[in-house]
Image (cartoon, rainbow, N blue to C red; front, side, top):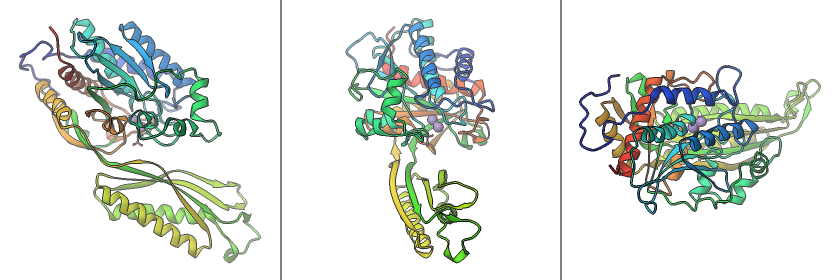
Length: 424
Ligand code: HGY
Ligand code: MN
Ligand code: MN
C-alpha cells in the first residue's frame, strides 16, 4: 500500500502520520496480559487480567500526560487538554476486554490507536482546540456478562445502571461485585460526559477489505443484532432404560432449533446471519437424557424488518418443534440493537482523511456490534476499519499487519484532529 506523497498540506497536521512501530509494540505489550492458549488473548471483562490491562493502559496514558477519569461502570476516559477547556471533547477509543478465545486486536487496536494519536500530537507539539479523550469501554464483548456493549449502553442511556450491575456470569457473580473486586469502579456518574464526537477504529472482523485489497473501511452503518435466549424444558431420564417414544429430550429439540436458525438466516441471505454460540444442556451427564436446554440465538441484519422476521420465524419453529415433542419453551430477549446509521459529517471526515492520505478505502456496513453503535445515540459518531487476515476474529488466530494498523490509525488521527481543530 503506498501512502500518497503528494498529500496537500493546506493546514498544520495535514500530513500527520502516527508511529506505526510504537503502536505495534504497544499492541504486543498489551497482548502479554491475559494470554490465551493459542497465541491470542483471554482477557475477559472484570477479571484480574482485565484489571492488569487497565493498569497498563492508565500508566501509558499518564506517561503521555493525560488525566484519567473513571465512571461508575468502570469506563476509562484519558483526557488531553485542548486550547479551549470549555469546548466539548472529541472522544476516541474502543474496548480492552476480549473473548475467552479472542484475538490481540479486537477492541484493543481502537484503544491503543487513540493513545498513539495522542503520543504523535505530543511528539509534534500539535495543539487542538477541543480536548481529546481516549476511552476504554467496560464489557464490550458481552461474553462473561450479557449483553454486549453493556457499559457504552448504560453511558448512552439504553440500559439502567442498576440492571447492568445485576448481570451475572456463569458462576453467579454480578457485574457490580466484580467491578468493585478488581478496584475499577469510579465515582463519576456514568453518562454525564458530553461529547463533540466519537470515533472508533476497529478490525473489520470480516473478509471484505482484505478480499478487495482495501486499506481502510469507512463505516457508514452497523447491522442490527438480536440475542434471544431460549429455554427448552423436558424431563431428565435414563438414556438406557427409557423407551424412545417416552423421552422428552430438550437437547434434541435444541439441535433441531439450531438447524432451523441456520435455515432461516440462509433464507434471508445475503444480508442476514444467524448462529447459536452459547448453549448449555442439563444435567449434561453422559447417561441422562437432557431435561433442559438453554441457548442464545444470535441473528443480525442491516434491515430491521428482516431481523424482526427472522426472530419471529425462529420462535414459531421452536414452538412447533417443542409442541410436537411435548416440551416447554420460553424466550427472553437478552441483547440487541437496531441497525445503525453513523453521523454523515463524521463519516465524511473519515473518508476525506483516507483520500488525503492516499489510502485505498471503501464504504462498509459493520457486521459486528461495537461501542460506537451505542455511542452514536449520544453523540455524532463514526468508525474506521482495517482489514484482518482471512476475515477471522473471535479466534486466537486473529491477525492484522502493522501496515493495516498504521493506515487505520492515520485515518483515525486525521478524522479526530480535523474534528478537534488544529491550533497552530
Ligand atoms: O457481538 C459483537 O458483534 C461484538 O463483537 N461484541
Ligand atoms: Mn470488538
Ligand atoms: Mn469482539
